[in-house]
Amino acid sequence: MNTADTSRIERIRSRLQAALSPLSMVIEDDSASHAGHAGAALGGGHYNLRIICSQFEGLKLVMRHRLVYDSVHDMMHAEIHALAITALSPSET
Image (spheres, rainbow, N blue to C red):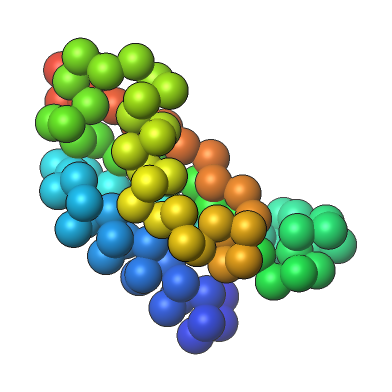
C-alpha cells in the first residue's frame, strides 16, 4: 500500500470517527484484488469496512449504510470506487 492509499484510509477513518464515534472500526484496502477494473483505472479504491457503532442500534441495514455513506459522500466515485460495509450495533457483536 502506498502513501496515497494510507492517507485515503486515514481520511475515511477520520470522517467516520467524527460523524459516528464508532466503538470499533476496521478498514481494509482491497484495491489490489480489483486491478484492471474500470474503477481502479480511474483511481478509486476498493475498501472493506467493519464498523460497530451505538448509533446503529435499532436501525435497519439501509439506514446504517446511509450514515456511513453520508460521512464519506464527497470521496465516493473519485477516491472510493467501492465500499463494502459490515455495520453492526454493539448488541449484535
